[in-house]
Length: 158
Image (cartoon, rainbow, N blue to C red; front, side, top):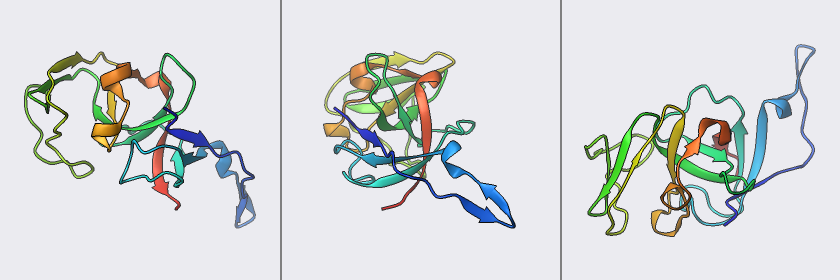
């Protein structure tokens, strides 16, 4: 399912003390297509994303391609490199413990009544949609590599 559509409109060049700042080289605009990130990002929302990927953390929302297609997807990073993730009786555990609460995402995650397990390598991430029960994500297409990440969400514009 298509999760995101890159916005190919004209970009504004801002001037600050006579210096041109060309934001379109470091940033991308996307329009949300689909419901996998409801209620945080509704279909039709326009978002600003940074191509600077230095600070990807648990809870970061990223835009990426899967290995099977070049369609841009948007999901939230839940699993970080070198972690072990398990779904035990429907509850997501990270390194054999249940996360109680994260500032950017509500834990514990209850994900159906299933048992699965992933061990992430040094450059792999586990991503999931906020609309957990209606999201195609790492549970379906597997882990993503850092090289597949295109940009990181900065803010919703509308």
